[in-house]
Every structure is written in C-alpha cells, then in structure tokens.
Image (cartoon, rainbow, N blue to C red):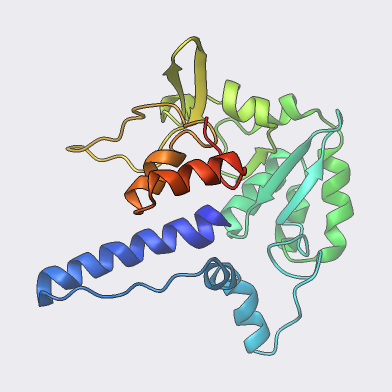
Length: 225
C-alpha cells in the first residue's frame, strides 16, 4: 500500500506540480492520502460495481478465479502455476501445450476449471516450466521469495537486488530501484540508518533546544542510536 497507493501517486503528483510551476510560475499544495490511493487501486472492481456488475468476491470475477483462462493451478509436486491468458491466442497455446486443445473454445466456461486443474496436476512445476519455456501462453510458476530474490535471472539482470556495504558487517541486501535514468542513474549511497540514528540532528533542525532534546532522550520519548 505504501508504494502502490502512496509513493507512486505522490511521485506523479510532484512531477505534475513541477511541470505546472515551470509553465505558470506558481507552486501549489499537494494533498495526498494513502487511503485515496488504496481506493484508486480498486479501479476494475469499482467499474463493475458502478455499472451494476457482480460484487467482487473470491472466484466470481474475471481476475480472481472465475474463469479457467485466468486462474492458478496446482502441479503434481504441490507447487502452483498462474494462468493469465484472457487473450484468445494465449489460451489456445496453453490448451495445446497441456494436451487439451479441445478446451480452446472454453476459456470462459467455469465448468472447464476442474478439467484444466487435472491436466496441470499431471506434471511437476519444473516440467511445465520446460514445456512453456518458449510458448507465448502467460503460464508461469508462482515463485517463492527465495526463488525471486536469489534465483530469478531477470531480477539479477535488472539489478533489482543490490548489496550495500556497511561498516563492520557483511553487505546488506536491498531491493533495487525500478526507475532507470540514462543521465542520472540512481545509486544506493548508504545502508538504511538504525532506528534513532538521526534523532538529535532532526530535532535540532526542527528548532528544539538542546535541553529539550536531552529531556526527550532521557524520558524515552525519542530514541538515539
């Protein structure tokens, strides 16, 4: 929520305000709330609700398990594969690859879900990954955190996990930045500070007297690392 509903809308709002300032010469107040962003993220469900469609619930709308073409399926080894083939070409390829070309016309037939599940349950995840390696079908493994952060080649290639050097300790792993700029690339300059590491500096910048800061530290109102 903090990233999707708060950070991204805030970044867009700031960029828009900066562009407006360049054009008009006037700054403006930006009023942002995590609550508003969270509501915004329900756009698809809201559209269905406002148009008199079904109330979203588990397995009753297009993107949460209602249809066989957009669902998750358990494999023979107890893992899961996700299917996101709303487009006919993806679903057709999927059906052919699992040996059920006869299901190609039943992408939105809920009664076909058990048949698809049985077909997927016949093989282990590793087998399906190999079968669909070069197939445009939107059929992908549901990965564990270990697989994503330590084994996924695309995550490594895109620099989405980085090592940050920290004094007196092993490098600290952190997520990378999804924003890549050619002229001003981002860099992780320092590891995250410990809790309370900058308490005194921040309070001083806010105008608190040294005596007041000392009292707050003594009473445990704020922490100092």
